[in-house]
Length: 241
Figure 1 (cartoon, rainbow, N blue to C red):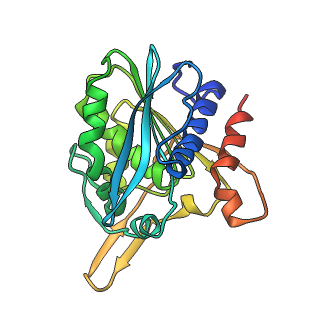
Figure 2: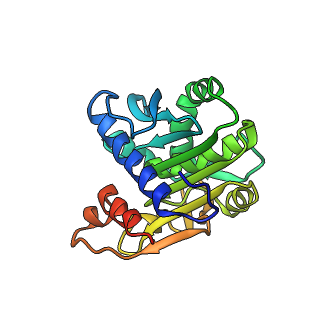
């Protein structure tokens, strides 16, 4: 796996494959076959609005650790994605974050850190995820940048909704994380939540922004679900030069 500041095909394909494996593991009670050269280090289960769900996994090789998260698969997942209230990001001075994504992440953070800290701190640490999992990967990677000693942290996500406000984006951009958001121009999910949302019941406005470093492509499948699917994003990663 090449360590580059910009997305390279080899890394993008590997991480896209890990996102597909996160879905496979969720369907099979946590079972999946790790990519060649990697072994499964831990599975991650989280609380999603009261429901305990298989969220992702950690795998490692001699040089790398990869943490991967799946996207929405259940009604609680979709409800959490729709919970667009904002709360203070608790693991760094980094503004406001999506309440639904943060609540899921906090439910398994202790298990995640226990697993990471049992691995070599000299290894590069990669976070990846699709859709809801992309939002969680964003939150988790900033936490790791602030609270681990791993020398290099990467984050590639696919079809991510917006995750925080402008201050969150600014803090993330200054964190030293090497990252890229893969965005299909035909996919509606990266447009969400809107940049400004007014909660009239509470008299509050929520402001959302995207991390600026993106890898744009256009793949039209003919359906909204197809344009957002991880299979479509995998195809785009495989087409990188």
